[in-house]
Image 1 (tube, rainbow, N blue to C red):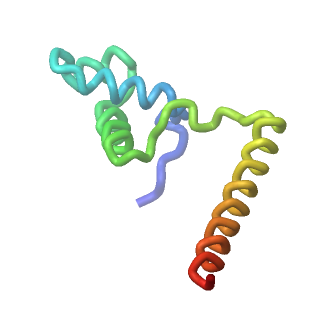
Image 2: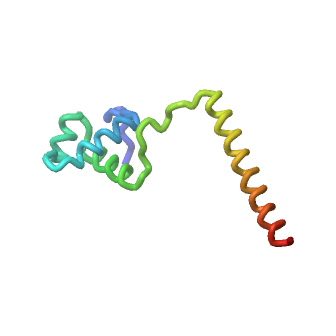
Length: 98
């Protein structure tokens, strides 16, 4: 059977939108079907978003870029933490040797 092209709409929703929709769908007075209609999305997309949110695959604003200064500070902090852990372990070994 040949594939039909160009019939459906393809939307790329942001993670923030998906998280908000998933949170709204968990409210007790909200029905999933009604929410999907209100948001103009297919109910399956809402259920898939809920599943991803429940499994921890979705977080709000995941793609938010980190500025270079903060990234450099984080890198420096990780290195300092590794060095500290190494020195602490070395100190424990030396204490046992004495």
